[in-house]
Length: 121
Image 1 (cartoon, rainbow, N blue to C red):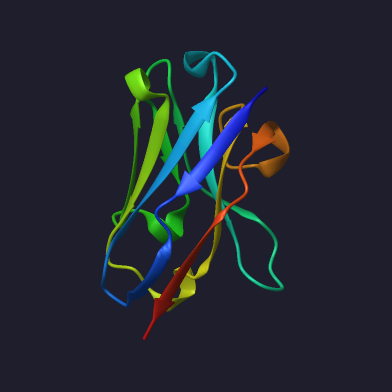
Image 2: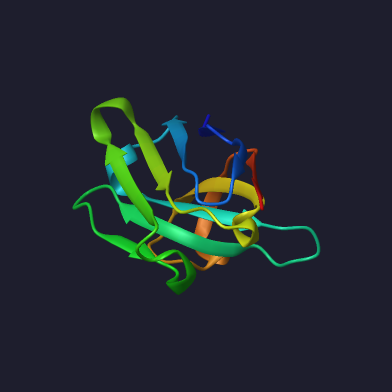
């Protein structure tokens, strides 16, 4: 059974940092891209970042470039999202997913349950 479990969300002031983790199991980790997505109330789910485990290539949405860093620990089947210089507009439920490379949610097959990130001003 494929499982993706997010952790690390919480409440932080603007300008602060959080590190999200996505622990994956039940599939061949290196064969998939792991993506981070977020969804705020009333908004569509949007892609934030992704990493292709096989070669470590990464991609970011423009709004987080220079602030967020995605990384992978393949030995632990875990992907991280380091979020620095957080802004209130980063507030959302963050999801990790496994699928094809890119930031289109429709390209991802398996999803975690999400973790709440709240950034206060």
